[in-house]
Length: 384
Length: 84
Image (cartoon, helix red, strand yellow):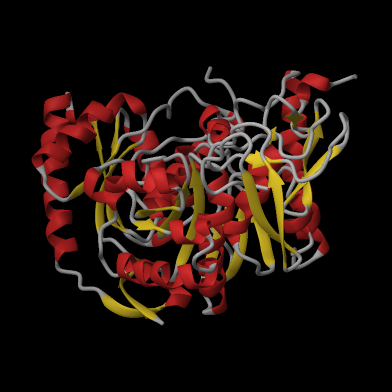
């Protein structure tokens, strides 16, 4: 099975050909947005934070920004920064990871926001010209790095949509591709299912360790995670406990052996199924996945969650009959028949496999068309 | 068991288990996607869904009762129970 993608010099394949305008720090977001109003067809990536961070927190943000820029869905990157040191450091990292063209514009070198915007427009215009000349080529599913995500979950997720995603995840792995399952707090109560599929003892222990870390965080704060996960809409949708939510959530990763556990924003080291240690909220999780090189996200939703990742086209799949109707503009595929038991998950997976190939070959998702996309960087320590 | 449509108190709910069709009568309204108890569950006993533990009964639960946050609680991520 093949799709039409953009071949990159690092051997990876993009399913989109974005020219990204990436903020190195939040004080330059206005320039990123202004460039995107002047130059059509750029992907503006404003971020929050990026200054005054230090230690492990700074390393995490830097790794995330570098990974976002290196993502194969991005043809070339224009970095906007207040000062040149941070911009050049980030540019060097993105080039080292991907070999792609990366340019920088800084306010302090240009003198002011107007001249920085003008300089950025010139560079972005040239990047778009060059990107527009690249053609899609036929590539195999072995070049696909897909993530499975769920948000606004309810009990229809575990019974209907996630089993369909799981079948597609197995199919991608069986065809030599890579699948990433994330959102660690949604492994609580289901870690026995994941850990017994670890390829070796090291991976098994790592799975148990990241789950235990969630428990330790709750203990350190002296509170229950109830309300944070499951969130109020999960509970309104019939999900009672994190264990119940997790048991339904991990189904979307399919049934294949787990090759490794990735840190937030870390790329998979080979084909097969991987776990990534991310927070459960969709934006933070998807940003980590994008930074890890994921090209496409299948996102199941129950009560309804509209959000997608601007770097990785995000397709919404629901098995909730109310959501399928009320949230129809935001839903890419309705699999309610699986929830009702009229079709099996395997039968439901056929249309989703077809949709996946079409999205990878250029079909736009509803989140892309409606612009319901955003970025959120995971933070682990306070800013100084 | 998760119901796939809104159930009114007193309605019989049919379900399949081990190839056999079984019935349970709802003791109260159970909205789409919510859970009905298939067995008596005493307070403190672990509750099973997906063949796995999804928490612990907060109070006695009768057959056909709605099972949700009022009578079922998580046993994971419970930093609030530290030291108890």
